Length: 270
Image (cartoon, rainbow, N blue to C red; front, side):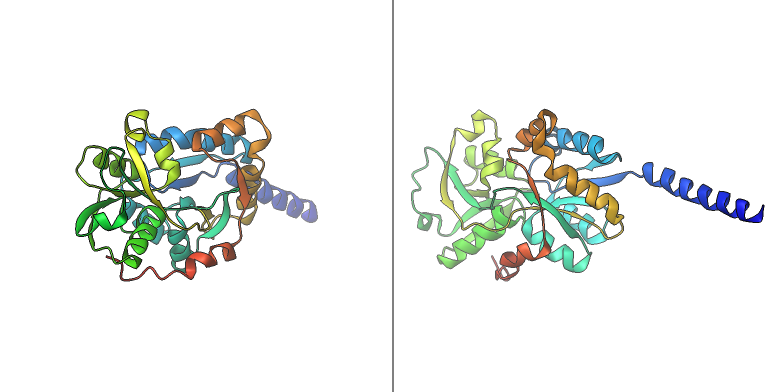
């Protein structure tokens, strides 16, 4: 009788743990390359698909600025996060985020854009000008492009306008002669913006953004998310989610893949 009670108690505890885990909700934050409304529009299909595939709910979290997103990463506020390569290197070390996946067949490059009708054809023509960037910590759109300008001895004053969308809009409106972005966010701009811009320069390529998880997320649930991401291009729903993000698919990631970013010297940039 006593053994039967013990077995029943153990079974109850296991069942309780399973129910508690089944009801767990994880937050999934996305770096604010675009406005919160655009981020929700492009990422919601992925989040919904992941919920079906993993069996647990995900709460999409947006931030109004990259500094606000960085503060959240620093505090370990979100269970999963899609972050740029520089963020991953920093917050893997300080907060413990661990790479889960990154986009398949993609390397990230920064771009400098000017108005299509701008007379600027050489980067030297940007000497001593104010240039638009999303934020100091935006990897490709800001860090890579600013580092390249510094290598070319181009003096400039950076002005941070919070998002890639704002960079493109401000350049189109003539408030700045040039600004930093990436090809993916440029390509998803409305034609009224995209068609008025011209790419002046493209930087070298690096390991792209990471989807990463905090150590507090159970390893089994991290694996479920990773598997769901990798298998996403195998059905129509997954392909629609990938199309919304303008990517071909996801691959499982290893921390060492971001060593190319670790080797960059990005300190003391203007």
